[in-house]
Length: 296
Image (cartoon, rainbow, N blue to C red; front, top):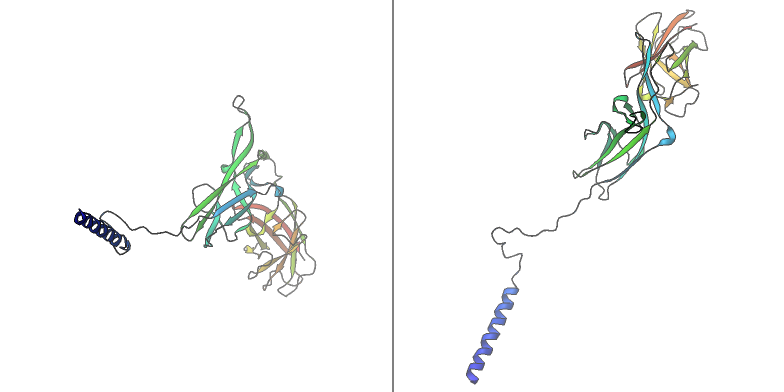
């Protein structure tokens, strides 16, 4: 009996020792079984967080088109003021911008993680909604835009902003267009130099126009049109010197520009020159005004 007990004790001790040895095998050394993959801890990369809203205090600005054939003015769209804010907690580089037609691609890029954008939305992208399902009467209209943020790891996020607007102004007939500008002779006489003041042009009616979308051309004595440099730009044969409210980036009612020569004698000494000024909204390709004055 003592012998059997001793054998059992030795057997149990051997099993414990063998079990402990197997437990000491490093799982990383032992190859994974067929069909298994080793477990790894992947680093989580977060998508950027996005927030947007409409800056309603800036109001809505309608843009009009004037058809000289039918003598009718119609709204072609409106500017909206929007704000965005984006943060990426991983600190990745970001590609940011507004998707204006909801096709999933950025139409208007921005570079700052937060800030304001003034965007033109054509009238075709505004949707009037009924006052009630019974009457079918149309009241306010709405458009939706999306802000898209994509980080360098390929993670993306987007946020909608829904803009509500009163109905656009109805089309009207008459030669009275929405924008009106007046031209007059500028101060100073014409000389043989290349820095003469030619004419002054002032906006008397209309909404704010961003300088980034304005092109001003002049034709002197029915000559070939010349494009003038906008305020702050250089390189053309004529330039625009802004007067009025000059601290913003828009041409507003009451503001104006003086058309000046810039390195070229467009109107000679003692000559009376007829200067035709054409103002165009380059974003929509529409002529806003044509006015004529004399530089003396």
